[in-house]
Image (cartoon, rainbow, N blue to C red; front, top):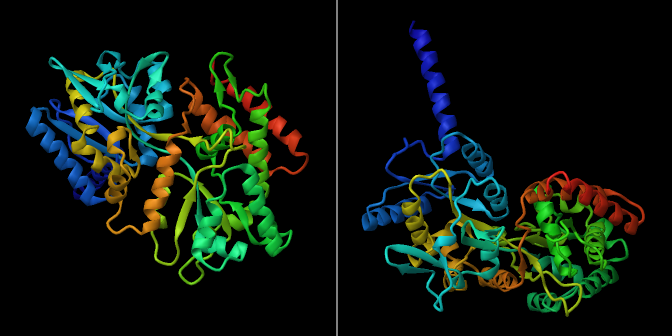
Length: 463
């Protein structure tokens, strides 16, 4: 009997542990509280600060809040399960930008049109009687674009980021034979177009031989797998002057003018200069204390990568993603989090008040620290604020990297807000591009085959 009791206790503990892992904290649900689902921070100090902010909100408004943190890697699957259950405890929640159409098309998130206004002020919210109105003009325009599906607003933007080309100064010095760090930075800052990258490649080959990008260096640190590869491909398409989707014709990667072909051709060319055997090591881009020069010229990544570049053995900087021509200019992708309200929530008025608080000056510095992204409210997205929120003692190079991210955000391109795009981004595009990247042969034929595969595969998801 004693053995049976012990076994039952172990079962209960295992079940409780699994539940706690799913919801992030093992607290029982308070039926009077507004539940707030967010990405766990992984930092006890920041978590404590967030809990204190929510306690302050309760003290000011009388509205209780139950924060439920879920690890980012598990977050989307966890909320998807809750959305489709008969009853959900979700009220306010983070939502990755491109997932908005998926849930809005199924009426799983609440349309916020009645809470939106355009006011001639930089205030993020405006009071109208006892109603909160969110001022569209106070938010980053591209971030706001991610909240609109079929003409209705379903979210309030919280944070945003974008991708740029990071580089290790020591690597550039070694690859180009430059004597000092400033010479390397000056040279890299001249890169504005694809032709400038071609010139960089030629100069590295002139220094190390024609085999430089097959035996010694990789131009790019890879493009990742699945959704990352789909997202990063947008940089090449946008910088070619093309777009990922035409809502009128419902064509993925429209190519009447050949610009989508040009974008994928450039992606293939850059990856042909990036041997996987070279870039696929832990230190290929960052180098080490004893050997600070890595073997990768560029890493295409967003602001979340900057934290690991605040090191003492070398400096890292970034340039905006180069455009095909100076006329097209630099273009990149956009990412980040929005705040939404679940349609099944019975506390919508309280949820709106919580969102008002989360995007206010009281919270945005902390939110930037937690997400490592810029605030979507334009006046709170200051360079000093985000740098000082994320780092205690940042190097000067850290601030310069964030400045590049901030500049890139001005021309960042929104992913299509269309139902089914996440499957296209995470499955269809990566599968076709992986085949194209790894294949040898005629580039034009490989690109044409990839375009055809992406369009035919997308038809299964976008109706």
